Length: 272
Image (cartoon, rainbow, N blue to C red; front, side, top):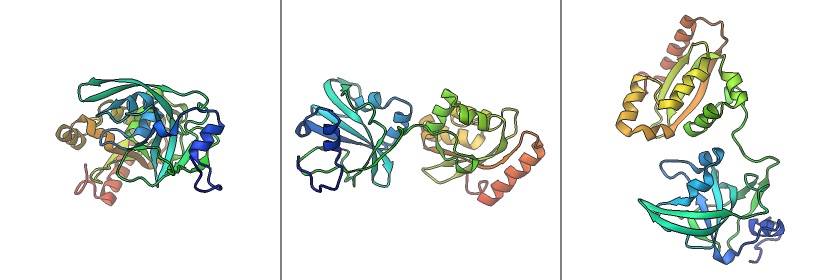
């Protein structure tokens, strides 16, 4: 493959220089995006991306190699590895592939950020002239980040599930003893649910209940998941509106919850 621009660091040549051996002409690029059920970046965070990619609705990998790129927004993609296709078999609802991660790329997976303007296709042949420029090489692999601060919490359901189940220390330490008011947003409708955490284990305890069943016992959320199906919880996002220390009274937390419900009009237009 010829370089279209000598100033661009192309993924193909970068991998070639790293000693990763594959044939571009026999390679498909998998532009892994939200499929209506799961987001591949959440599968990557959970360490399940390889298995997730191997389950396909149809024979998408009629090739020798797969270059996996995960959508991370704004026409940027995370390099998730090159896999050799070893075989496949028909299963109920699709095709199950057997793939093997090529060697000499372990330290690159999760670190290379690629620019690519995607068309509608998610599976494309790596043809002559197709350029995937590297726009960033991260110092560390992209992972579920440490707790970013109360004003910066913005979690998908999938990422929250990983945080709770893995009991990531920085998140557990920040949320387990903190009372407050939080927000759940249904990203398919934009509707809000305002909730409060006033128990001894604070926000961590309340959010653990959402991971368990999606609704945490809340009437409107339970109704929504009954109508749309339990898998609809994958569309929820979680953030923090206000925090209070462990000495704050239940009455104070209740009043602040009511304040935010009024401000966001979540009783009239949302899920309260």
